[in-house]
Amino acid sequence: MSANLPWLHDAKQQFAAQRRQGTLAHAMLLPLPEADGGVLLGQFMAALALCSSLVADVPCGHCKSCQLVNAGSHPDFHLLQADGNQIKVEQVRSLCQSLTNTAQQGGFRVALILQCERMNMAAANALLKTLEEPGQATLLLLQSDRPAALLPTIVSRCQQLKIARPSPAQLNQWLRQQYPQLDEDLGWCLPIAGGALQLAQYVADGYAAELKKLKSAWQKSLASGHLHQKLSNLSAEQLFDVLKLLYQVLEDEMQSGQLEPLQQLQMAQLAARVMKDNQQLMLMANVNFLALCQSYVLEYKRLKN
Image (cartoon, rainbow, N blue to C red):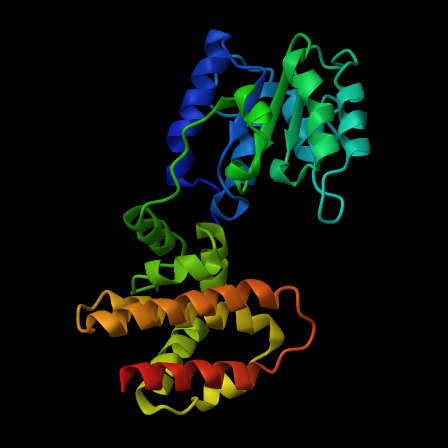
């Protein structure tokens, strides 16, 4: 899969220009989910900052720094990610201590923090001092899947790059470049995948085709009032995606303009219940999937009659 994601072009160019001009901020917030290339963007920026070529807009790949980055052994590059569900204060303190050391390659000291919203309160507070006083030639790159979850004090101390998630047109064009045999618009599948890279993986694995069949199974179930056989044999891993598909089917009907006002309200309430159940199921160990899905079909049939 190509890492040359067209929707990252402007952000890369902005970063490269700032590097050439010597105007890089000491801390940058990358508000782009991993599933849309946020981690790839952070890795690109780290590699370019460490590259010895001062005129290129991409890492040269040949200098000693680039070779060390590619080998995963650059002494001035520090990668920080969650230990379990959180980024813990001990991890941040260790990172901040490392950033006080002299750069061994004579250039930047770079830290890339992945899914930085996972820092717990103590970890976030430990990072603040380094954000305020980073030291010379220090660059902190904070990638975030959910920037709204970050402390305002963290956000205010970073330059926030303007990065747009891929438009439907960009996404479809890019997918067709990766998979020339693809002959359909898969934009409807994006909310289930959560991002362009994951959607591309769905295409590669054949899972996008499976989701299409499951969505059709919901449509047939709601029309007949009986749960389709395909929805009767779900794995626990599929349930979350299947509920998102049902939400899509209900949303499509609400947007069709064919519902009476009361039906529109009831359909919205059912859709809200589906998404609420989806969130709650993440915390539940044992669920009767069949009964749950059948209850949605019965509720739909009741409100349509």
